[in-house]
Image (cartoon, rainbow, N blue to C red):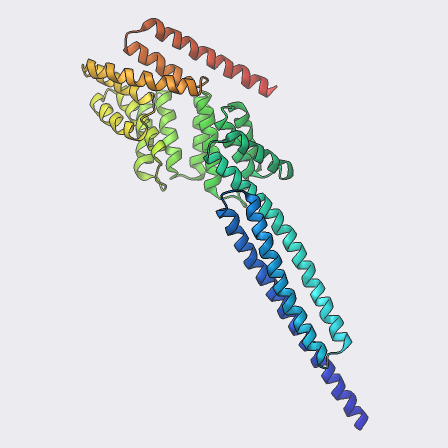
Length: 386
């Protein structure tokens, strides 16, 4: 009977020892994972705020990982040592070691996944900064490296599209934009991002003078995000260039006053240019002049707005002001052509401005350039299709 009591007490003590050891190891594992989560958040903040290089952010992140893991190991091993000094059995130590191995494996997997994610994140942040600094070729190289490992990453395809647009490689940008649309998913990406991709496609098609296709892309953007002010702004501009001036005015009003996102200065200027152009085409010359003057505040480097202003002032009989506007527009358009000689709109504006100044021969030469640029765009599109 006494021996039975001893065995029972020993069994109870052994069970308590195992339970205590398991509790400490579980608590240590939870502490380990919680610390890892904090490290990841700190690392993300470091990478986002590191201006010099993503590698600096990753190095600091690695230091936090080493410190955090060291703290966690110290806690676990100290609890193991305290338990070993008491009445903890070998079985409970083995059980605790097994639990610790499970958490260690989890830590290794999480760190490996986290580091992969941070490499991707750091490169994406770096590429975005390069885009902001107009270093388009460098940004494009980073996105190409990303796409080697992540060929179905819509965000990288979209970033590559922006870089190619900045490099004036319109056909390649259009192809990259198509890949972004093909890889983006409704579950993983918000509607606004998908709407932005369609809007970017519309902008590329607009620059290639494919107005009908550009309008279709913008309509797809608005189907996803009906109150997207930037999409309404681009639609107003396309409609005005297509000659649908009444609808252009409606779209411009929605962009300026009914959108759920405030337009930037550049986009507000483009919207006002479309509005002024539509007013001018509809014979509202006074309104066109007023709108054009407002547009100049937001887009002083534009040549289109000076075409509208010169034309409207001429219809009002204000020839001196019309000539001055045409001269200013001609100075602007020369800068634009030097920056991007394949931009059809600039050659069209140059022709119109030269006609306002009475330089008919030069205007015809500019019109010839319009046809040459369109011919080159068509041949480039055909070769890319082949």
